[in-house]
Image (tube, rainbow, N blue to C red):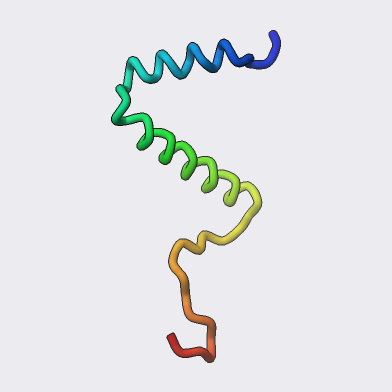
Length: 60
């Protein structure tokens, strides 16, 4: 078995478009990207800093 080529990706994208419709595709892509970035952070062991916090000794 080889790697996925351009034609296979195109067929998968067309099937996804038919199943989910054009309006849901951006939301699905956004969710997938967020999930992948969270996975990478977890693998690297980086802390989850979604909210900015003030540094000790500073106002704000």
